[in-house]
Every structure is written in C-alpha cells, then in structure tokens.
Amino acid sequence: MASMLLAQRLACSFQHSYRLLVPGVNETAEYNSGYSHPALLKLIQQPQNASMFVNRPALGILPPENFVEKLRQSLLSVAPKGMSQLITMACGSCSNENALKTIFMWYRSKERGQRGFSQEELETCMINQAPGCPDYSILSFMGAFHGRTMGCLATTHSKAIHKIDIPSFDWPIAPFPRLKYPLEEFVKENQQEEARCLEEVEDLIVKYRKKKKTVAGIIVEPIQSEGGDNHASDDFFRKLRDIARKHGCAFLVDEVQTGGGCTGKFWAHEHWGLDDPADVMTFSKKMMTGGFFHKEEFRPNAPYRIFNTWLGDPSKNLLLAEVINIIKREDLLNNAAHAGKALLTGLLDLQARYPQFISRVRGRGTFCSFDTPDDSIRNKLILIARNKGVVLGGCGDKSIRFRPTLVFRDHHAHLFLNIFSDILADFK
Image (cartoon, rainbow, N blue to C red; front, top):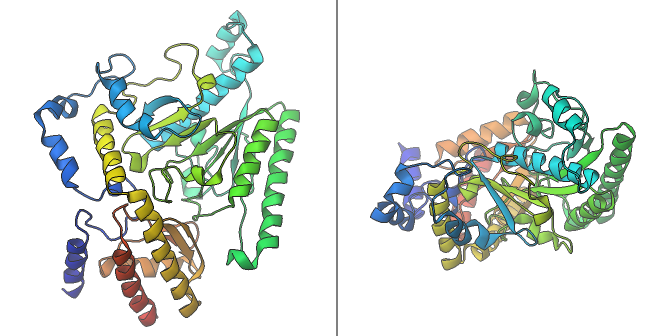
C-alpha cells in the first residue's frame, strides 16, 4: 500500500507525465512532452484533424494534398545541418534498413557514373548475384544496436539474443571506445583508447576493400544505448567523420534513441560541431514517426527504390508538429540540459557515497547512466525502484540508464535521488 501511495504521489507531481523515469525499452515520442499533454489531447479532438486519425494513406502513392506542408511544420523544421532530404518510415529498424539501402544505391551510382543500369545488372540482381547485387559492406561498432531486420542485424552487436540463429553478412565490426571514468582523471588513457579504435576503423576499411567487400558506409550511434550507454568524445566522432570522407564512405548517424532533445540539443550529434555534416541521419522513438534525413546527392534516382506501403503515418506527423511546438514554447531543450546536470551531479554524489554499487556515472543532458557490479545487482535495484514507484531501464551487461521526458525538472531529479539514496542505504 505504501508503494502504491508513493507511485500516486509521484504521478501527481509530474503534471503531464505519469512516470518518473521512462524505461529504456519504451522510449516513444509522447514522453518528450509527457503523457497525455493537454495540447496533444486538444489536437486530436479538433474536427478538422479527425480524418487524419481515421484514415491512413499509402504515402508513397497517395499522400494527402497537404502532407509536404505538414512535414515543413514538423520534421523539416528541425532538419539537421546539411540534410534537406527526408523519407518517413514507421519504426527505427525500417529507418536504418532503408538508410543502408540508400547508401548502397548512392555508392553504386558513384561507381557507375552517369550510365543507367546495364542489362547484366538487371538480370543478375534477380538471382542475387553481382554485378546487379554488389558485394558492399557497412562498418559498424561492437556494442551497437541498429535494429532487428536483416541488414540492421548485421550492424547490431549488443546482445546475442538479438542475433542468434539468424544468417548474417560478413561486414566489418570495429571496437567502440571503452572510456575510463572520471574522464578528467584518465585524459591520456581515453585519448589512446579512441585513437586505437579509429586506427582499427581505417584498417578494417582497407582490409575489406582487399577482400572485395568495399565499405560503402559507416553507421554509428552518438551514444551506444542498448549496448550499455557507451560514450565517446566529440573529437572521436569528428575524426570518424574525417575517415569516412577520406575513404569515400557514407557517414550514417543513428539517432533513433538519442534524437528529440534528451541530450540538451535536438540531435545529439549537434554536440560534435562537425564542419562537414553527416550524410544520413535516422530517427524514430521520441520522434513519434521513423525516417531518415539525407543530403541531396543520396536521393534515389528512380521511384519505388525506397518504398513500402505506409512510409510512416500522417497522424503521427501531426502530433509531432505539436510536440515540437511544445519543446520550443516551454524551452525544453534548455530544461533537459539543466535537469540533466542536476541528475548527473546527484548520481556522482551517490557514486561517492556508495562506490560498492555505483560506478562510471556518465551522461549528456538527461541521457544518464551508471554501472552496477553485475547484472543480478542491477536487476534487483531496478525491481526495488519499480516497487517504490520509479521506473528505470537496464542496458548493456550491468548498466542502469535514465530516459526521463523533456518535462523532467530539477525537483523531479531531486525527488528521484532521495528515493534512490534510501534504496542504496538499505540495499542488501
């Protein structure tokens, strides 16, 4: 009964959000503005929007007359630097899957030059043979999660249960930096670790070119999420982008989990300060709809090359436009940075007081996490917290991650920290 009363008290304190911390396995877009935000409830009740929710068009064939204008009001209003082109999708996996296809088409088009498809290409692609089906590859990182469809699974390396029994491609896998914390005490070691990983990226690109499995693109998350909330420095990503350019590879940033403002910027890769923008960027989850932005040179040269029945959902795009308005109106990006600092500072304090349970505290904005000694202690802490009205998420082998909404404020951080401090004090 006490736990139920506490959960109710937490819910009341959160205005629009009925959970203190959103679990890592359930990161949908509504959580950016909290559950059941009044502005969204008002939107769906307006008669002029009814048909948008009742009817779902096949967008690739029969889009609504105003769909492009609606995209300008939503996704295109937050388009990342250098990417003017947009394709919507239904989920994160299909966003990454089709982004990979777009990269392969772009790379083959570069090789082909201005020529059209040859008869040999048209015939051999039908039997899964070269040259119609070139033997290209995508370089990914150990610990990455990019989805569960066939192409995405070849770039996913976070948990064996995702991949076991599924045939896959021989694509290169580079090590992702394993940073030591606190960062200020291990500057030299972390620089050496990142340099080692970048050197391995270049070695793999060369190795696979010699194997006739040319690396057409590199895919990376700004923060590896499923793999354990693994971070790297902004300099690491800038140098990774340079390597992609040097070797003629497309540079794909997977913002399915990091996009939408939780790091204090709308897109996490904006923290990097890239001189040359990424080529492709995928999104989903907190963005309500999936899809990817890309540079104009990656635009498919014929219809139906990137296609499925729905290509997203206009009703979700309508909601997203209002969510973006809420983010701007309520200054929620700055709030995420400010509240995230309160959360991270509190976690560092708990780490100092309970080093036997908490280590490697890390985060950007409210995208925070820490390690526990092992998965059994991690799972027990998550269970106890849930019984006290707090939902936490696990990731990697032994990490706990935080995914609060953008309406998460400083006082919510302190409320959580007080509860979790009591849990750690009594933990056995």
